[in-house]
Length: 138
Image (cartoon, rainbow, N blue to C red):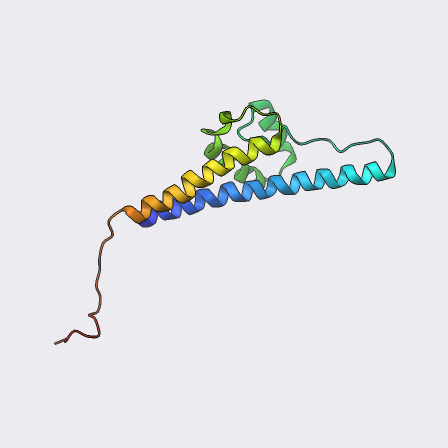
């Protein structure tokens, strides 16, 4: 049972971390595009993806995100939405970085660290195949 919990904890942590990496890449790309446009002096700005990057978005935002992301990315984001949904209402900030960091950090602590601690605390089955080198075998 402990190994199943350990695998689930690691999988949940991997999904949350991978979704956050995708978010960071989107934000860096948007910032880079805005810097290039500012240097050019066009006055144009890249379309902000802050709405589609918030955790557990509303259905209309979810449909816009599905249209923009690949199927693998959307699968990861949907799993992340499910994992972060209990924590998404904890922040009252309009800043997308706060909306992602706080629930993501809590999820990593709860699912990752808490799941691994729970798996470690469960009793293990002791299977002893061979004896100790100090024991006499028949």
